[in-house]
Image 1 (cartoon, rainbow, N blue to C red):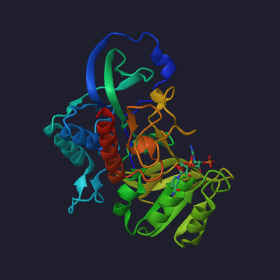
Image 2: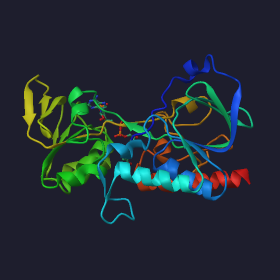
Image 3: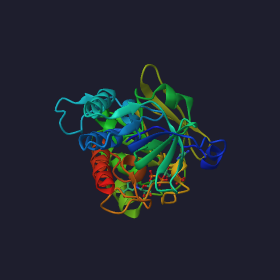
Image 4: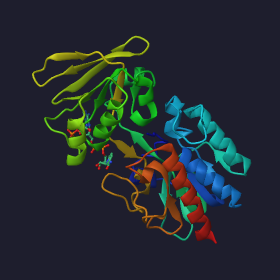
Length: 326
Ligand code: NDP
């Protein structure tokens, strides 16, 4: 799932002209306002750590771009993404979290106090920082993807697949995510077209086998998405094949699964991460390589990416921060 405040600014670029005047000192600073950030805030606030939470570019995170959330425990009748995020915010505020607009644009984690610049010129020093900045689903960049976002176009089969029960859909991508999304959707849709730009899948052998064993998945190798078409909602996807011919698929859903970009760029000079930018945490904890800096949610999770797993890791981050602060 999940798309968040994009903090992707070039750290070197943001290093210039930064104010060194500390405007505020906070105990626990939380960056990001998805389920991870708000859950961390609820726990930290209840522990009397007076957290300050900056929402980032997309207040509420990726869930605000989905419609119905049916898989978060505790909502037997479902809840819309924006409604759930509003409730999480209220819950965090109820215990004293200060929720603010603003985007972390640079950090300096070299000293005993952690420096975070908000919107370039507001410098905060924090005893502990919880990074919950999420990840952003990559899209192909077609105008029609924008146009039908939320009404036929999705980047999360687990979130939105349910709405396409018994229908035909397209999944774009050839990696593990695409293979996983395609097999998940195949369980509820009539037909799933997996559109792969190369003549092979990049997904692991095990995932490829699952795709091949699933009767209602058809893999279209060497096909590229040209356009998504429809009226109010999607009713087809236009592709070009290896021979340059135009192919139209009559589908009602288009799932893009070409990867996610963790929103971690500004932390790169200080925080250990893998080659794709996911923050490395010490297994079983939310601790990063910098004492007092913790990470939770999608920015450190490329496997599960669910609201509930993000919330769970937010809880871990708050408890780890609490123990760190003593
Ligand atoms: P990947 O980067 O592994 O794969 C992205 C896929 O999207 C590739 O097939 C790529 O094609 C394709 N793609 C990228 N850009 C475009 C484009 N513009 N047009 C068409 N196709 C495009 O991303 P994933 O999200 O699949 O996986 C990320 C990481 O997470 C991987 O390490 C993966 O193993 C892991 N993961 C593990 C899971 C598990 O273990 N259960 C589940 C999900 C992810 P091409 O091959 O041509 O570059």
